[in-house]
Image (cartoon, rainbow, N blue to C red; front, top):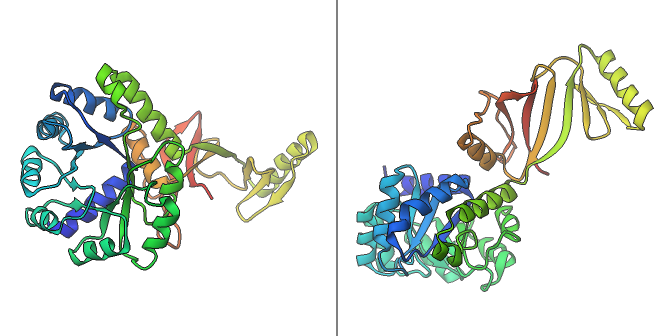
Amino acid sequence: MTVKEKIDLLVDELENVGIVPVIKLDKVENAEKLAKALRDGGINCAEVTFRAQGADEVISRMTKAFPDMLVGAGTVLTCAQVEAAIKAGAKFCVAPGLNPQVVRHCLELGVPFAPGLSSASEVEQALELGLDFAKFFPAEQAGGLSYIKAISAPYSSMRFMPTGGITADNLNAYLAYKKIVCCGGSWIVPQKLLEAEDWAGITKLCREAVDRMLGFEMVHVGINCNNPEEAESVADEFNAAFGFEKKVVNSSVFSSTYMEMMKKPFHGKNGHIAIATNSVKRALYQLEKRGFAVKDGSVKYSAEGVMNVAYLEKEFGGFAVHLVLRK
């Protein structure tokens, strides 16, 4: 596999995860416990910064305990650190700035590198080095999302991982922009919880961040009817009882926006439940980790190639579960 193919694979995996915890762990003996806490919270990824002594040992312990975990090395400033990170098992390297010598050395060793950028000149240097994925740092301090949109406009191939000032409150605003793959941050692994060895607390913060990122919300319930006449009749009953306006469309009849009567039996024994999410792609990744498989052949894409519809294999109380991309 070429380095470019590795970078593309890395980007796809990071896009699924959405959130990359930036970790400074002083006690290397806690590496496995921290990795488990992250995974239990739905984040199978970590950027272990070389700002802490023993970072390479932390990476080694994490990757040995959980070989499928996407563990990278952060604050990689020298070629020697590149070699230490790779030897420890790091699957990618990240830096706060762009040092061409360090980037080339890492790529020559076959490992993706995401340098920190904050200007158009640095974007062009990264492109010249053969990169199309980079860290944008420090994100908020350098101008935030509006600046990223402005600076990325001339460079259609460059994709970003903003880090610095990212919080639960602004995460989704960043992730909604098509050129942002994921966001890095330390708010879900605060130093006080690491020092207290509060693994349950870290898992809780991770799960809250994942759920907020996905933004699950029920948008309507679909009821299977035997024919169009029955579908309209049920909608008329909802209108008579509750004043829900009826709207007839191609395959169903809506009663307000929350009830959909199918003109003929569709997915699910009784019907379906539509759940909106900020990202169907990330939602399916997380749901599969939680034990809920996607139904074969149910995934659909928009004209721009964005996953926007999918059904789960499992029915809930006789209802199929239908994921839709939030508009």
